Length: 413
Image 1 (cartoon, one colour):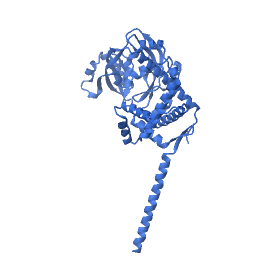
Image 2: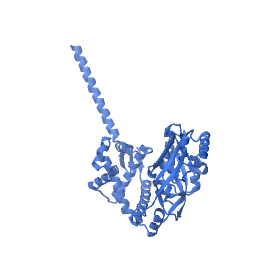
Image 3: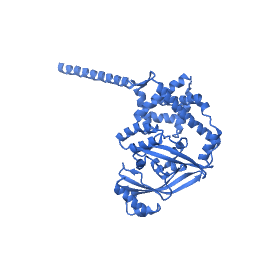
Image 4: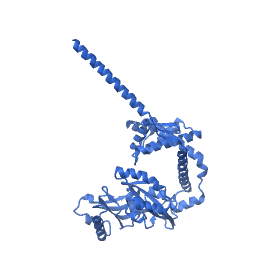
């Protein structure tokens, strides 16, 4: 009996000790969760905020190094909120509710539905509202600070309409660099390299970077696309950027399959031909094993001599697995960006062998079958003015944020 009581006492002490240690571990975890991971002018960013933002970026399927982006965005938001506070910009709860509604509407949801959905995935609604607060405060600050510098002249509107409307179109000379993201190691290098290339300002520098770093077949030409490309052939996200650039400037990195793409505008030329936008592209992709090996390229060259139209590829693919040939007719906006960029360089019946799939193991024999076009509807002058003004404000905002970063005291413990 005494022995049993002694055993029970030891058991109780063991349970008490286990609970005590578990409680200590819980407290330590909580303290670590709310520990600062960075300071921006003495304003702390906690580990909890960082983890919440990483989770949000994952839900939004943000490409690239999510942890790095989460930290950079939180730092930017601290700077934006501090600048807004100095300008005495304040927002009400109803302002933030409207911002949440605006964001949720992009996913065809109401604000409460969106907040409930992300809450189920671990994101506290108040953290998302903080994100909205920073965005709206910055927007108000930029408008207040730079609105008088975003005035658009009639001459600028006329030129934009000539380039985008029915009065005419444009064609561009571009150079290209493709940086691989097909492995974790390549992605890490690319994410460090791409912003440096985006800051290049001369054609010689971009050409040198293409020869050294590009994974595209144009690297031997210094990334040069030799022919003029009609601006309307390009994917919308590339077209809209190039129209705002000057020769020598480089785009921000654009995500494509297994790579980031950067383009330098070498020249832009207005044309008198009526502008028209491709409503749909009819194209074929025939897949050849071997990637860019000599044998695969030789097979592609032989195939090119045998086919004149996309329909001819059906005979080539006869008695082969169905997946060896794709024949698609899609709106330009729905075509993968790397495919759309290659098709932009082609006329009907022409072929590109620049692309690969299966991590470089499969060569894509890409042929444009037909480009269905519809005349552009001329935008109103007010719409053009608003678009140009927003682009100008965006550039001024980026420059101001760079200035805030340069003057800030940012440290990580």
